[in-house]
Image 1 (cartoon, rainbow, N blue to C red):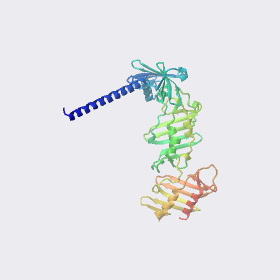
Image 2: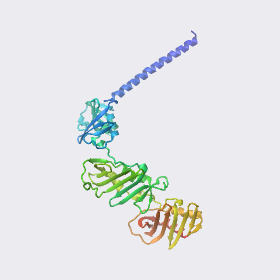
Image 3: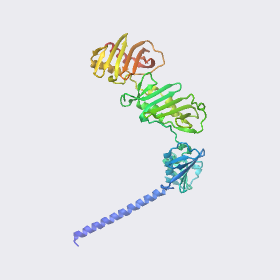
Image 4: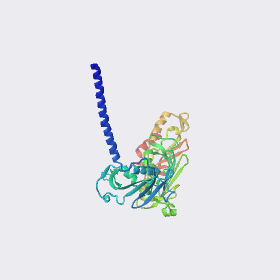
Length: 439
């Protein structure tokens, strides 16, 4: 055997030994890891088919059974349930894991006496029983007990298994698809109605004008998307039942004959949803009734009061003119008794002043000033005499009749379509009035 061949064989043997050692060490580590993972399970039967769930707290008890693919509540078979949440809870139970085992301790010290008893039962009669007690300090998890031992479990596990039976009821109205919203009409007792619709002319700019306020302000105004979501849209879609009355009394018992607020939603497919908010119930709650639901419930005032108290000024854009010139038919001004009328021929790119063709670039400068005029506030005080009048007619038939009235040294009062609407700063407004006079 040549010296070179001996070297090759020796190298191969060395690599084999190293590989074997690596395989042995790696396999040993993986085996230990698998053993540790297995040791964290109290129950580990992922294939168990759970057909019954029993939940008991000091306040209530309830049972659920599988009826084909869906869960039903025993004794209240007609109520809607959060099917996925029940399936998830059953999985947490049959694969119950812990983060730490307590070697000693009194169950009463951890809220386990009087805690939530959750039992999942499989089709072959096997029971997976867990009691969930107090939260661990710092909201890092829960104390739980199974098979006579006390454990610390994850927050996710504890949250899934600590719910009461009624917590698995479907608590939400049958909402319409917000992305296909056709109308959101909110009647507020003693505050008037707000009506939100998609803008038929399209978004004005990013974050403005995807929706308009069609009722609740003297004229249609584009809505600030983020403010609408924070003050109206978000809270509406977060309304949920807190407690249920499955055998409700007459509507007037709950204040539904003279409601605090009514929310009506429709989408572009024609689907509708209605939420009626009635009298105050428990502290922080009001009675409510959802369309297509047989029960009466209570809902949190944290959501309903936010919607009820929304100020239209908080959700609308502040410019009087938000459309481009091509969407306007005529603009009329009256200052010091002199009327000036501009007509827009968008198809041919022409402007006419009092029926005489006008320089487009010159008018564009005036129109730019017009689009910069803003709503700067509002007041309940009386206005004085009219100073300036502006009438805008749009190609789609909309009309804005805006009168600027004497108010004080800093602001003009503003009347839109005959209704007191706002105040506007005098400095910018006077600049625009002078531009019209000197045109």
